[in-house]
Length: 586
Image 1 (tube, rainbow, N blue to C red):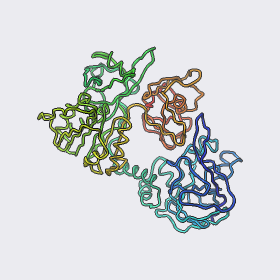
Image 2: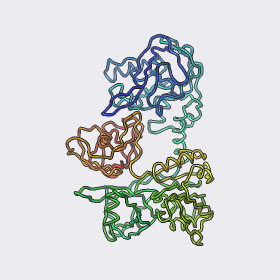
Image 3: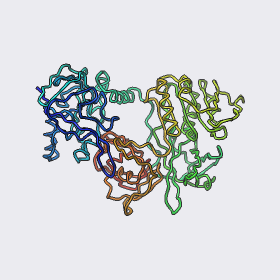
Image 4: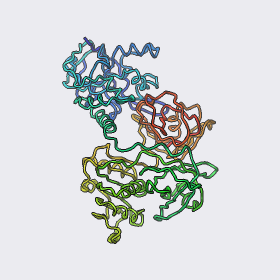
């Protein structure tokens, strides 16, 4: 019979780590005597990051004494006392490849239900001073698991553990963990996992997304980039769209056809700035996907070195360097309704999507929703209306946010849209979005400022759209994902401290920073953090793929081989270093 060997608790605290402060409850220690287990916690216990740990579905973490013995041998360590893996219950028995999600167990006065494996998290590596640990737990099929409290009660070390119910589906903790984190997911096991009522909502959502991709892919995966690195393109036309937005049409200098871009992709361009520094910026393509030329439409930013250069110096006949179109923010080839939301210069990628829909005279229901300060700042107003007029089931809704504006003339026959456009002289609200009547099976594409996309996403979810059907594109640096870190970076990106590196050039395209690699950094992620560049990560060992980043040019090599390789043209900065000069979309 399985036995509870140790009850371990610990309240969250701030822990210094790599020059930062992490708020974590990973430091657990054994306690004597009985402890009351409640719906969210054991008395005296807590979690620091409730996004990834804790809550009703993850109230108690379990790890096995047999896994302790295994890691003592594998890691050649004799300092692994109970609690060091962050678990609340250290148990004899209950192996990960035997316990099923949905199993129920009685321990002392309390009853529990298994809900999910442990989340891959860098903090177990912090606690053990072993950075690879999150990856090792998955690779060696020894993650441990979480319990939900069915009946509250007291427990103590020495209590026997009795199974009171077997989980539906007979999928073990190790099975479930491998489905999410290891390549080659078995569709049959995926369907079985979705039938387990006890599975936590977070893991269920991940499996639903995986199942949808396997059974009904939303569209073709973006093709491999049309060429490697940067090539020269000639400016064939320059057009002023608004006082702040200018379009540049680009073609191959030898007049050869350019590779077709997918609707919504972007083009990265490179110029030589002040002091000879090479600067890279990315701009969404605003042209039709099958057009003979690429068109980028650039808003001039007040302190934008590249946008100012393009606006003031680039003219017809000039040559500019560009990487091939890329990006996963692309229009899915489905027959479901589609909603295109944009604000300001965010109109560019969704305009390319509108071109694709109009080009095939799509019968799909289409919502075109755009926000601008005033009519004079609505780039492509006439162009978009002409495209909408070719779609029999299109609806257009325009919001102008500046006060005391006169409505533009939208009555010209060639500008008519089947139902509208409807012009509102006010900011778009959540209520406005719900009133649009967008059905729950629609795919929505959003581009604009972060606040705009966050508000629209929330409103669409309230209106019944699944989060997996809401797609976003961000200009500039992405919002950081640094779980548990309390002192978030707020400054501008800068050169790393200390003497300059002498290795390959590393360019962070979104942040507009280039620097030389130095071996004092263990990974590209560590270099990015030293430059105060917003980063995204969770496991830091190549398991979760939270840090996946487009690799515009160059090659990386992995210091820790990821459990699943990223897609072509992508890299995992958390476990890689540059093998050549690289440009990362960070």
